[in-house]
Amino acid sequence: MLKSKNIFDLRYRRNPDLQWKMLEDGTVELAMEHKGVFAAIAHKVFKRPSTSYIKLDELGSFVWQELASSQDVKTVSEAVHSRFGEKAEPLLPRLGQFFNLLERYGFITRCP
Image (cartoon, rainbow, N blue to C red; front, side, top):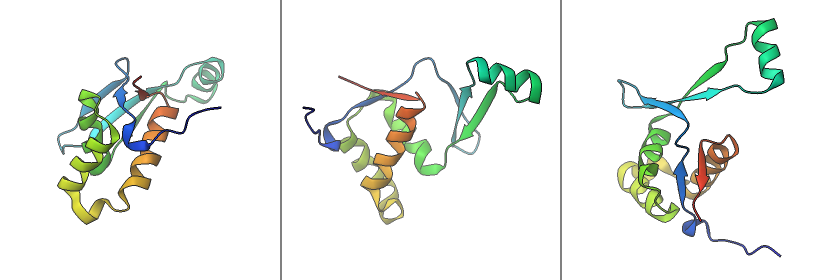
């Protein structure tokens, strides 16, 4: 049986192999390389680019920068609330979904 974890106790870190850059407007752009057989076929046949660029919004860019030091979710959420206040609400559901998406695509990993 799996132990349920409190979201506040989870720690994440950015994937060191992921290419990303800070844009002039202060937002972050992640580079997602398409790998595998189907991606290669799509690239050759349909002229699909081998890399997609994902631009994070202001809140996502702030969270991405906070993950530089693999902080726990509680610390990140407090920093987001201090910076954005009510604009970030509902904060915990948004952060949970954001972390799940980043983890699913391999942009971040959970720290032990």
